View 1 (cartoon, rainbow, N blue to C red):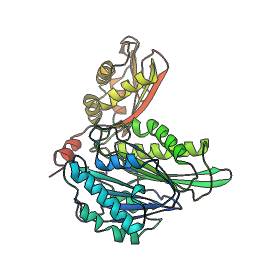
View 2: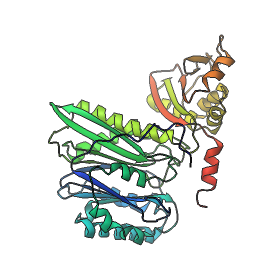
View 3: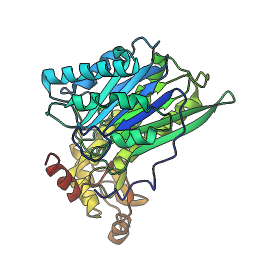
View 4: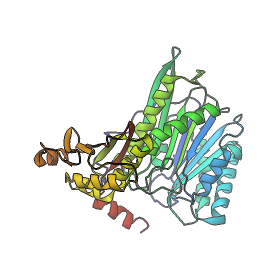
Length: 404
């Protein structure tokens, strides 16, 4: 599969996070000749927080993780992830698979089952051949290395065309605190938690409740503000671990919060840049709504519209489709106050085409790989920004042949 034209030049050089190690292996869950399982082990006492899909058909691994978040943090923790099979809509087999995997991790590593968090991503509705994963656990436990996070990032990919990573280092009270994260996601991406798998690690000291509040709040501003295709996954999982190895307490620290926000937004943007078949990265910025909730309705209506997204793919400055999306959003809108811009070019205002509108200028702008669609409803102070990509035939090709 060709790498997305919106991909970064290379996987970033992520810092080692003291207190967490990684290993990856090829278990042959579905893919042959590539790594498809990763195991991370966190030091005793690590705080673990998570946010998950709100899908009514969420998978057995998601339900198990949700039940474990906020438990006793005294012992070590482990994260086991496989790609190729989502272990979703698999009934009793799904529950048995999670129990077998968490038990096998406990036997191989000594991490109690109550602190083993699993995730599976891939095809829905097929029983997970978990014996292929358990057969690799001894090897995964034996080859743990703090520098193996890039291998872990590659092991969790499905239709992704590149591994995703981001990091930050922040000074707190004269000492350095490090954050490093990895993610996977390309299709079945729509807000309602995150719609992907994300794992973030820090050596900061912070209690579980404080970490959970931080992750949940930033998630609403980052992963919950992206969409590729409007489809919410059954398996979305974001887990963050704080090992405390730095000895630096970041509770309530604004600099740490800002740094974590940057890492999460970077990973969220990378998911959009790897949207299945994507050739354009699109920012949708809505202002002037009656409130932030209405602004979000408008922004998501634009970002999820197949007509808007296909126009973008065709480099067509079809602002009429944006008008349509605003009107269908369910948010308060006044046709005669509405203004729309593509980048810095005002294409419509006061409910009509802008007097100085230039089709040539707008069409030239649409050829850029990164675009901004701006909407001003001129009704209030509500604001929302979301990120999406175009919709090309590549998306159809990938998803029409996904199981074959």
